[in-house]
Length: 137
Figure (tube, rainbow, N blue to C red):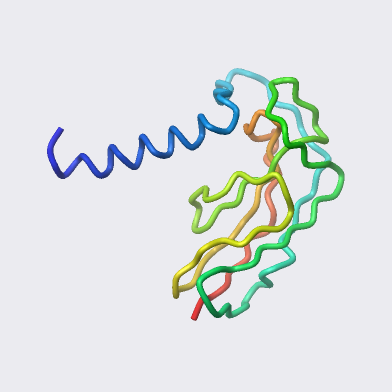
């Protein structure tokens, strides 16, 4: 491995460890059937077009038709799961609640949330919020 490849490899290892730490469950293969969910997830804060001051953004979500569970399990139910937050299409948080502060730097961001099953894998179809674009000054 060249010195130039080492930082990228280290990033991939860190992502793999993060995902493994969320219960040690592997993502099902595409051939495994996934349940659908009645859940609807929305982003209440920040509001689209907001300008945020400081080093963090307070994220508030609403979840209807399902509930968040803290345990990770392969015994999945369509109305139970976790929340994954994405900033600029990068997974930044695997959360067990509906409010969270995310660290940010000046710039414009696209935030979206996904309600996933208790094994951290997506439902079929996936349960996404609408994207919210906000700016940090």
